[in-house]
Image (cartoon, rainbow, N blue to C red; front, side, top):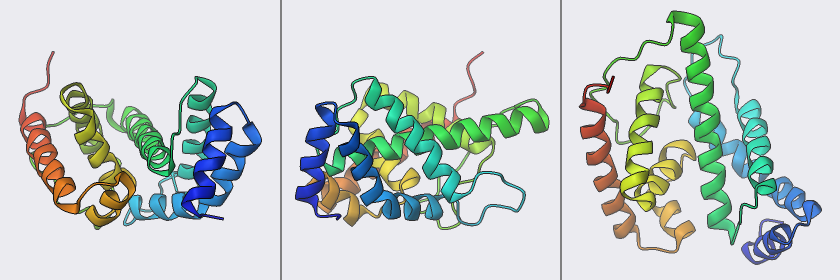
Length: 193
């Protein structure tokens, strides 16, 4: 049951406090979330304890926490935006924890931001730098952050993002280019004390 209309009806019920409806939404979209997580973590070195299943489960717990905090999932696109944000949070927390254990968490300056994440996200200093830059971008333009989250953290293409957000692919591409320029400039700035 992944029909967009049925998902929207269940999301409406979940917004009204129906926990069973939210569980049904998550169950019906689990495969899509798992595929997103698998793409995101592709190419990670052996020894990582964060795999696609763990990422989906951790994101699920964050989604449930947001729902308890009165989060509103208006439609399928909104749900996936929350899911991408939750996955970002999990990946950043994981990278932060790994760095704290490995080297004391020192950050270095990132000088590139790839167009595509074919090898998956790197769970290292780059992730923490990207997260800080995304936080700054959110204060400037939350819509651009949403495009980046859907592209990087959900692994969606511009065409998929356009369909999900009901916008033109050209508009999404422009948003991606603006966000990428902002993030590159932000990542090249020296860290603030």
